[in-house]
Image (cartoon, rainbow, N blue to C red; front, side, top):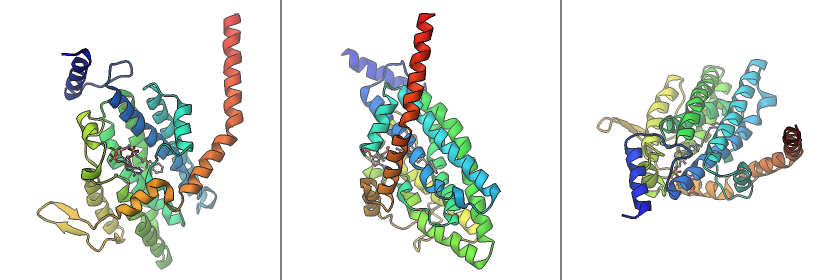
Length: 314
Ligand code: FAQ
């Protein structure tokens, strides 16, 4: 048996035995590359994901709502940082990852290419987008790569607070005036289908799933997680008197799940390829932020170099 085959078999045994893989452990190159891809796209999503909500900081309806929204958005920045750090443990530089985002080589979640048009959208983002994010990320607290799994534990705790604050905004609006209720319903109508798309293509069309499941990077499939999200969220909508915008939605007694209508995959791929309503704006905002932060990075690097030189001289 060749050495690499031997190593690969031992690696798979460790995965099957539920051992965590740590940065200095041997791993197949494809495992490393798959993780760098997923973790960095996840990090980019957290950072780009600040933009739709950032749009409402100055227009939050009260000081309390503004403080909560600011804290939530800062949490997302923190998630991006933990995730970039986790990706760096795999031997890739942060500059390289950011460059991949800014040049359009790396993806970020399709959901952040939709506009936040009203205050109710901030409720819908917390309720549905963070709700979908947690549904997917709870399994990632048990992912096989140690640094990613550990980052996800804290992220999930924070996402859970985000989901509740979004649902609370929606429930206050839904029990308010007719106009407020209509605003909440309109936000649900616009964010529902894009939220279902967040889970990625159907299992049959998911390029990475087979390998990611074998290596326990993912532990549940895109469709399983999407179904769980639908089952849970439909009941939450009913509780606050809102209607999920899907005429085909129906409880299926036999399956013990809701059946739901077809997802518009053309829309999904169109958004992923850069043609969603806000893709260009999002990338422009990120590129400008990167340029505007250049002097801070340069000053920090100069400071670090001076400190290191002083240490060597001492
Ligand atoms: N958008 O083979 P699969 C958040 C791509 S965080 C764009 O099924 P995989 C927090 C996929 O990359 C939200 N692209 O891929 C927050 C692949 O392309 P590639 C992000 C998508 O990786 C809340 C291709 O399609 N969460 O929301 C999407 O096995 C509020 C084939 O797909 C994570 O990143 C999509 N929706 O499964 C922040 C969680 N779906 O790379 C602010 C970690 C798929 O070959 C405010 N990631 N693609 O070029 C994962 O769990 C997985 O990567 C999946 C996709 C499940 C997203």
